[in-house]
Image (cartoon, rainbow, N blue to C red; front, side, top):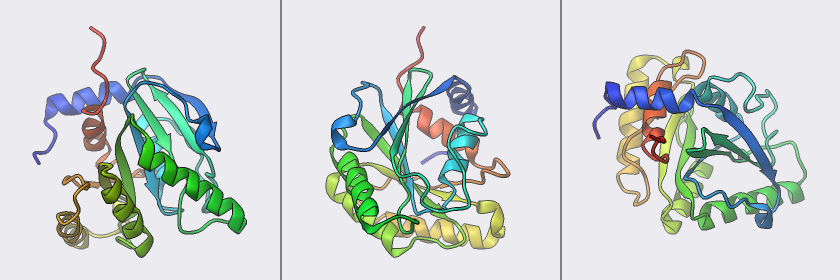
Length: 214
């Protein structure tokens, strides 16, 4: 797939410069809102940098809470972006300082959302570039493949590794994704701290949104 051109980048910038408002947190499936807009969900292991990425995309420091304690996000959090796109912050998986019962509850909620949400256009599956794809990432990929839910790998913290290892990781990840039916072919390599790859990811997500009002 071709890299976003200048028009795509500008369209992404304009969308993500719109007001981004918190809508609601969801703890149970029957609380899911009927919004009628395309949704993009952000998933990943605990401490993968999901909150930092959301803040970087929207240009806001506190849209999503960041924490050094993995597993702080235990609800599905919905945000409206300019009336054109809904961003959904999903609970991290893999580790959390919570009871087994609580972990099972929000894991079940997340998976029910991913498999049954009509508005869901894409899942951004965040992978820490320092560690690559892990077993629990593969488990989520398998479930998304089975449910035919489109997902895109977003590598995070790419400023933490050197260019050559990063290039190898992108190539290896691309080969792994080529065998998966629901995987989007484009891999986004990002750094929230350095802002690298953020403009390109904005452009990719803008293509999924409602068109701007004329």
